[in-house]
Length: 187
Image 1 (cartoon, rainbow, N blue to C red):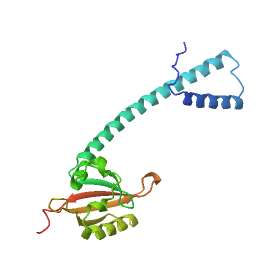
Image 2 (image 1 turned 180 degrees about the vertical axis):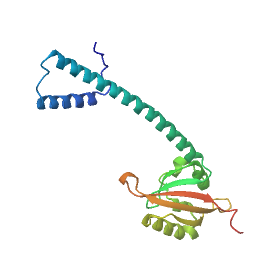
Image 3 (image 1 turned 45 degrees about the horizontal axis):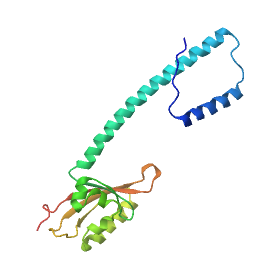
């Protein structure tokens, strides 16, 4: 008895499979000539179907594990005790965590695409600019210490450590860890 299969939910994938099958039929136009050949072919197709079902189950398990891992990473990133920032070459904030947003005194959505330099005191901007130049031209970790611009509160001193990478051939990004060191600095 041949197991009835359901139609794939993706018509585009179905059309691609039909086109590939049609192409393969043109290459080998010979059909099984005996009942035994037909039975062997059916057996092979059933084995391949079971293999595909097993692979699909494994992919579904892997997908669930990946989603769980990603959610754990997202929580760790969002609620870490230090600020995390992803910066473009011009210092624009591409991504930040909650601690980083709190350090800069804005909400996460208000930070994105802002230039990090705008939050730094005028006296520390050259230091930060030099840091960006070094981190984007080096393959090493780079660091600097800057003071945030005063916004009605006492100024905060920050230690910034960053490294630059190109994820999957994308433009280089600086991944920076930002820690407040105000209390550690001598008055």
